[in-house]
Length: 95
Image (cartoon, rainbow, N blue to C red; front, side, top):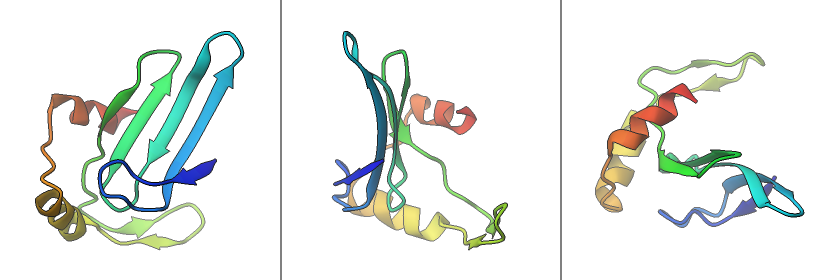
């Protein structure tokens, strides 16, 4: 897992995990930005890019750490960076 800049908002903690094979190049890629919700998912296919939907209600994960809702933050990022949601973004909900 390496951290690089997000291509949308420029956040420095864009989480990027990928797996490459010698003759094919990058075959798996899982990237996510906590700030704006931009995601890249690829698993032996073409990469699917889009924005992960808002968390409308906070909750605890399996370790007991509370994650607050991010609906207001994501709406602000959407206005600031002129982000438009498309049909492919809803596909990312089920990955």
